[in-house]
Picture 1: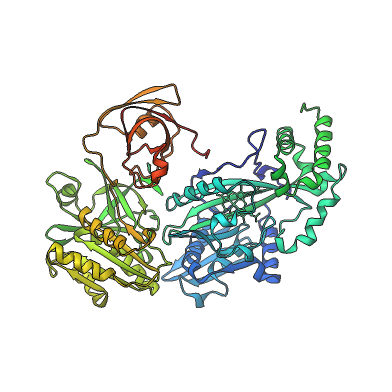
Picture 2: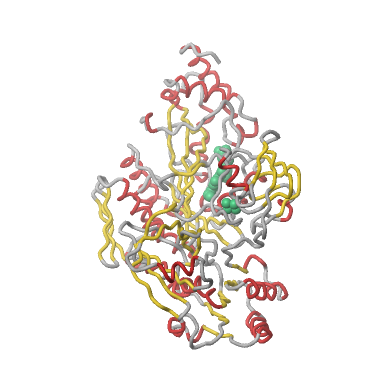
Length: 314
Length: 315
Ligand code: HEM
Ligand code: FES
C-alpha cells in the first residue's frame, strides 16, 4: 500500500496508552473502499480458498446476524459507492453488482439454498475488511462468527465462541478497562456506528499475519537493522468499527487494516516525530505485547537518523 | 439511529374503542428495527414512546404503532383526536431497550392491557425464525381485548387471564413454575403487573438476566423535582431548576456530556459525584456505582452537590 493520503495515522499525542478512543461515525458506515480494493479482495479470496477453516468460522446462532450484515453491507456499498456497486431488489430476490470485479450476486433473503457460502462469508468477499459478528447475549458479548483474513497475530479458531473480556486476556493490564469498554459496547444504539484505531508493527508488507503462521512471519523480527528498517518495517493500523445491527441487536465489528512502510512514514515530519516519541515512551509490557521489544533499538536508531536528516528536534 | 425526521400518517385503524393503530411511512428509506423496538414521537405536549408492532422481517418501509387513549389532554389524546391520514409527524429512532434474545430456548411473554404492543412484533418475528414462545395476557374482557383477532393466529400459544388480582397472581406463578433452564421471560404492562411477574420470577429463582422488563419510564420517576446547586470540576457553580435536568444544564453550559436515551437506561450521561446527596432514578447503574456516579439525565441532587465531568471517551 502506498496511498499515503488515505493512511489513517493513529497517533494524536506524544505517548500511547490504552483508552477508549472510539468516536461516533456519522453517517454510520461499516466499510471503506480504498485504492487497493481489487488487490486486497483478491488476496482475501485466495486465503479463503487455501485456508477456509482458518479464515472463516461461525456458530449456527449467528445466521440471522449474518443475513442482516449481508443486506447492510451491500446496501451501504451501493449507497455510498454507486459508481462501483449497485443493489437491486425484485420481489424477494436481491441482485448485487460489483462493477470493480465485474461480478453479480443473486440471492433470496434468508434462503440459505440461494447462496454458495454462508452470508457473512459471501459479503466478506466483496470488502477489504475482516468482519466479526459479536452476539449480544444476556450474559455477555460473544464472538459468534468471523471472516478473518488479516489478523494481527490472533486466531479465529481459538476465539470462536469466546466472551469479549476473555478474548482480551492476552492484552497486558487491560482487565478493568475492557470491562468498561464492554459496557460501552452494550450501550451502542441500533443503526449507529463507532470507530477507533488500533496500531502495531508488521515486519514486511504482509497483511495476513495469523497466529497459525507465526513461525513464518514472526522470525523476520530478528532481521530488522537500522539500515533496512525503512523498507522492512511497516506501521500497521486497524480501523475498527462497531455497528449495532438493529434487527438481531448484535454487534458487527469490522477491521480495515492499513500498512505503511517506514520509508513513506518518515517523509511526513509530523508523523515521524509522533511515531518516534510514541515508540520511545511505549511502556515495556506494551512493547513486549506488540512484539516490538526485539528490534526496538534498531527501530529507534532508524527513526533518529531520519529525524536528524530532516533536522527535526526530538 | 436517526434523530428527528418527518414521517407521514398513511393509515389509521380503530382497534378497540380506546385503541388506534397508526401506520407511518416515508418517501425515503426508513431504518430497519428489531422486535421490541420503539419509536419516539415529538408531539406538541412532549416526547412519547410507542412500541413498533410490525414484524421486523416483513417491514416494507413503514412503522406501525398502537396507541391507547389514556387522558384528556396527553399525547394519546392528541394522536386520537387530531392526527389524520396525510399528516406529518416528527419522530426519532427507532431505538430498542427491549430486544429479543435469540439464545433463549423458550420465551414466555407476560402482557397486560396495551402492554401487548412490543409482543406484537416479537411473536411474528419468533414465528418466522421457528422459535417457541407463549403469551400470557391479562385483559378485562377476552373477546374485546386489543388485537384479539391477531392473537387468534397463535391459539395454542396464547393464554388469557381475566380474573381477580389474586387469580392472576396464581396463574402467573403456575405459568412460571418448573421451567427449563434457558427460558427467558418478557414483561410489559402497568407497573403493578410488571412487579407481580418480576417478583414471582425472583421467588422461583430465575436468574435476573433472563427476565426482561419493558420500561419506557425511569424506574422511580422523581415526583415534585426541586432545584439544586451543582459545583462542577471544583469550579463552576450551576443551578439546576425544577423543570430541567442536570444533563440539560450541563449541555447548555457547554460541558461535553454524551447522552442517548435521556431516560436513565443507557448509561451514557454518567458523571462522577464527589459530594452531596443524590436521588437516583435510573435503571442502569449498579448499587456500587451509585456510591460515586449518577446519570445526569434523570437523577437529581438534594440541595447542593459536587460533580466531576470528564471528557466523553476517556474511561
Ligand atoms: C467487539 C469487537 C472486538 C473484538 C472481537 C476484539 C478482539 C481483539 C483481539 C482478538 C485482540 C488480540 C488479543 C490477543 O493478543 O490475542 C484484541 C486486542 C485489543 N483490543 Fe480488542 N476487540 C474488540 C473490540 C475492542 C474495543 C472496542 C476496544 C477498545 C475500545 C478494544 C481494545 C483492544 C486493545 C487495546 C487491544 C490490544 C491491542 C494492541 O495493543 O495491539 N477492543 N482485541
Ligand atoms: S442519556 Fe441514557 S442514561 Fe442518561
